[in-house]
Image (tube, rainbow, N blue to C red; front, side, top):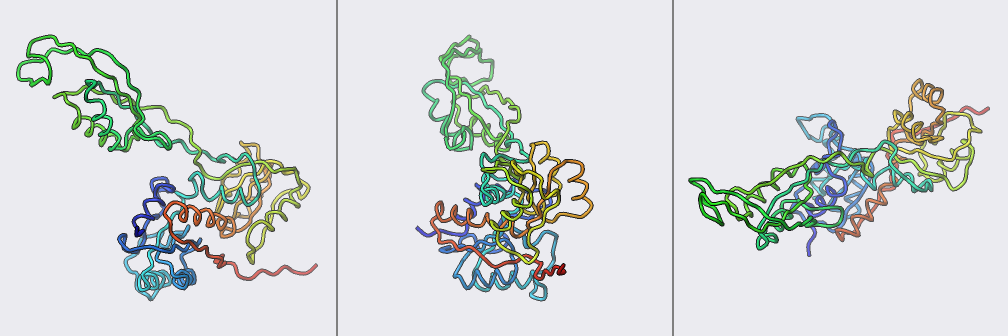
Length: 375
């Protein structure tokens, strides 16, 4: 069976739903023909020209990156700009580009899960949890002979899915009653008569975004001229998705020792790893956020974390966060804290879609030189 770009996109969208992305973000298929065949997928953090060249050299038909190529609007992809040259290089070589950014940051598992695993954290949970997608309960009443037909129609519309299970429903036997008025065309009973019929109560959960599809499917499959149904909006449930992760170390250590362990666990960059806080500060519970997560220091404090590992920390905000929260901060570099996710992404695509995958080890961190004055 030939795998296409569209097939890979379906799996990526399932694991990193685009609707989880921040409103300002730009995720999904950037360029490429959805019907084009894919044998090899190359994964990387940044969609820069060197990575595009690497994907072409690897024989990939699809490049998946974490960072977007276009975050702001554009009116041109001419090869006179850096981003335009990336588009031309990929398109001319027949390589599609897909982006999973903030939707992959909050996914379970996502970018910060890979960072937590790289640092050896246990009992990992979201640092800043997100609620589950809103869900409704749809209830209707159907003659016994029509239950399967209505259930199949609801399932086809996306209702009745709970985790890895589909066509989930509660069924309860009962009796329905009605009187058909003038002009009605009842499926059972006669106009003017009180009719009682055996009915089965069907209850299914429905993602709120699919409510209209589910109701239309119910009405279309139901044998009654005017089927009765209820739509109940359910309370928001917690989820395992969210920004960042928090987990336990195997054994307590000092901030200085922990910072050295972070540097050893992550790929090296010119900027290296730096920490803010007392070097002898004891670290047991660790919060992490791949990429720019300095604004999660307060969330880390609420979770009882001793340290937050992230990137792109600013001078004043870092000093204030350490003083106000007591949480130490470790800046391990934007690219380095997101790179571990690439291995997870490659394995997912190889296992689920059946394509060959390659991981970019090209350091695309923008900082290329670091010198420290000798003491």
